[in-house]
Image (cartoon, rainbow over all chains, first blue to last red; front, top):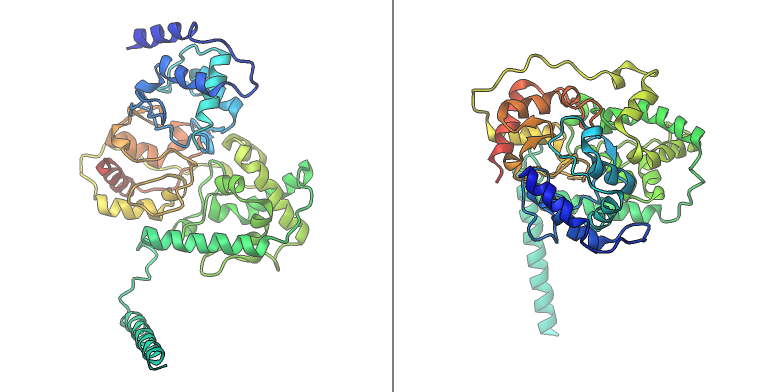
Length: 115
Length: 282
């Protein structure tokens, strides 16, 4: 599965043009959440294939007070968690998926719509 | 005319029956006043909505002073640690045992501070709330100190649990030191899910988690616990089995140092019962 996730991650880089919006491009983010394989482990409203129960569901994640148990929820912290979960919480089941900064920002833009 | 009188008479009879039924219900004592007996969800949310609307209405005229001042925030944090933490807990710090036994359970302020306007928070702290355990601080704290507490509440949701510990460590050992639960043995004995459901309410779990069947504020502080049995890992770190669940519930600070989930002094048998209930959720 890891290989598949990695492959999907690689595909996504060519997916669509990079945005310059400061808060990210939510629609592109939604596609990326599927492309990086987030759907395997998380339920994400609006991402049809995202029915995984391995990780917590992401409904209302924009309203959550803390992320990963220790990070106060902000766009910057969510992006950091998506990009480098193993550095933030060593040993966590959440994988480092080599998400680029722009991609993370777009994912956050979509996840912050879920409130 | 006669028709109107007949309607009025009917109305009076119905009203008398309603009052009689209410008096009989109250007089019989069947209503369970025990704090361990959860409110039903409609009662809980009706009371909550009435409280919320009342606060909104009464606080409407309050004009807050500027609150983004580091000194004010620091004073507010100290006051919070002295007077609020005991019931509401703090990032990564559990409320005191007596507070967990209250019904309604004191709300988690990390979420409230983000959702409620400053003037509403101030009003509640100053005047308290009837029929809850929220005291009025009007005659206990000065106006400036009341605002200092509110100033701290503005930064609380963005303060990592480690930040609160560091800032209050020199003040008290209580806030800094997680409790030492005993050894974790693997639970072969099946827990009692019904007792676990009551325990989840009594330890205040439903203030921060959405747990089907446990009525509470369910603020989005921690993740929802529906279908937690199907999760791949507990807290992202432990295998999802009963022994690990008991361990996590009892000692989250050892499993994940700095977690916003506090050590609540849950006994082994209570944690085992909670796990039994949580694993019964589909």
